[in-house]
Length: 575
Image 1 (cartoon, helix red, strand yellow):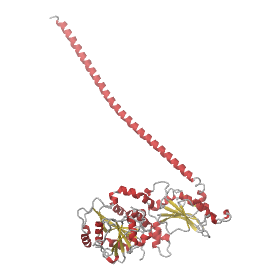
Image 2 (image 1 turned 30 degrees about the vertical axis):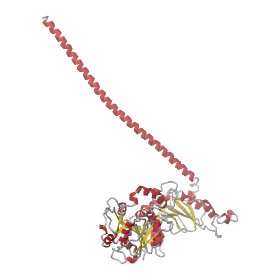
Image 3 (image 1 turned 90 degrees about the horizontal axis):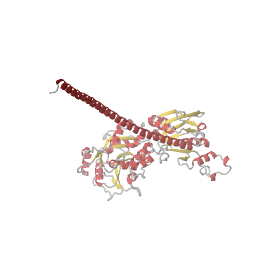
Image 4 (image 1 turned 90 degrees about the vertical axis):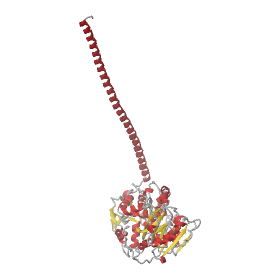
């Protein structure tokens, strides 16, 4: 097929046919991992038996992941249905899916859980997209049901689905659902505007389909994961340049709730360490300082061919000193001697070591041979898969400590595919450092025509921007190294100690502020109490004053009465 060019995740450039209005030609393998749950599996297979997609193009592979008793094929199932077991020594959903896809015949793999009842045009809704492009990941829409009351029989499910009445089979559970996915999709214009770091989040495995070749390109399932395998696969699919399409027409019932709904805290606690190691986009999970991770956030490429030891060392050390903790460096060059031994092997060195024509290469290898963040390669692949970013830095140019973080922040601001930093201009042209988004390069490689500039395709699909060296803190080694890097570890320790000191001072100051606030509250309480006491004593004093005045008045009245009596007796005389 002609490969359409989809910018970013904007699948709106495609025009899928309406279900029932086209002629399918691609075969699909529905892979159903299952352990126990025969009753629900029977309903899943009954619904698949009533799909609108042509039966001769649809096979179903049930992978029995150690059920006791073993699962059996029910009477109602698609004609091309079989049950297989997992690969030797591999258990769990990832291992079951790997075993199922290994024996699948379809051009498209449609993963479906064993507790799903798909609507009649569910598979067809998925497949109409896959006929348009070979790098699409299609996600169905789930309706959850608590299965209250007596569940329908397989015969009733097949009849309802075949009659396009799957909606009537169950009552929707108002308390459970994937509302968070609906919100993400709605917030990004049907997910058409979703940025690359967000795509993997909607890759939940209950019902998802993708080309078998794309799954192989991404590396298949990570069978070391017991949970979270769908999220991790979604991340790797993003790095292949895949487009994620949530199709609301691909409806299905989910029978009951998921483990993540029933035990969310435990699932998160279990998954976080494994997802952190494998999905660099989850920055919140990589907050531990000084850690190394399975998948780096950015791979830095420095070419040692023809460069001096000092120039390569300056560039490599500058990258390793980044404020980003998850950086790896690949040093490219002729690392195999004419005799076939690795450059740096002392047995290859014969003669005067200081006059060795490969001396610079030997010194580079000797400098970094024991650093787990640095590897050596004769050449690098077309992309940095599975790392999401690659910075190619010419030897002799040193990125600043914040350079990588600043560039990635800029790239993520509008999902740019390529940032070019002009470093200098010489007789060969402009010397530039380049930050590439792995997904953008993979997409461009997939759709570019013969002889077409890859950078032009990246710019067309994701955008490309030129930047200047000074603003993005690139400096030549003569200005940045070795003075900048001398005792750089000691400097890092010093600044960390300084930060710890300042933090301790801030904590002490905060404690003092807290104590002062408590003292102020106490003084305010005392002042309030004093105000009340003053008013009370003032009131009592006024009361005593009034009592004294009344007493004086009473005494005066008593004296007047006695004086008047005596005066009356004197005037009247003795009786």
